[in-house]
Length: 230
Image (cartoon, rainbow, N blue to C red; front, side):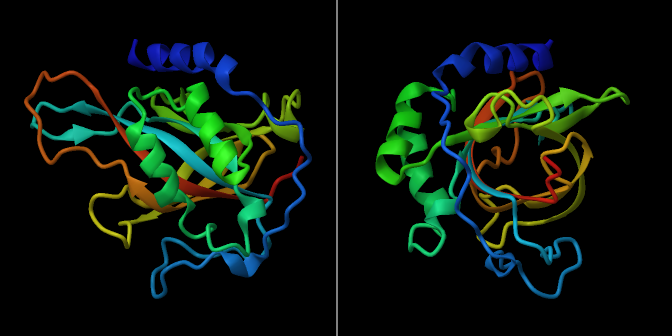
């Protein structure tokens, strides 16, 4: 029921997502993604990314019987094109500046029209798509990135990727930020690999009382998409 409620929330709020119909035209070179050295969980791809997105959303957690929060109900985020910020000083800190705006919003709806308007007004960011979780054949949840209703890929039924985690490291910026991830595509043509990096916030409290209701914790991150076959 929790999964269905989050999917219903997503569908109900997409009407606020004022899609952009501009072509994706700003190129970001392969050398732009700088990952921590001396670790094998995240390895920079040798090809340029197809898309670079700012994710603004919530990480959703349930309280386990042992009194710890677990991310068993995934995340919901709006994804914005930041490729045209490359070479600007804002590119490396957009997740921090956007989080300041997001943290001041009175609700946890990343598709809220005022948030989208402010990000567009401040930095010219347009919506690329949405990020949410779906039920996989094994009965668990898989992260999905869906560009089928926004931007230059609107109406393209193949403009999505369902992924599986293949690597992660703690955020170098501190324990308050969610992990950096490497995801491989399982289905869809949007990307064969997705990296979640440069995360801001999103971690739950250290403990909880068993039986406590689920919580949503705001976060931002950069998502880099590689190997698109669209």
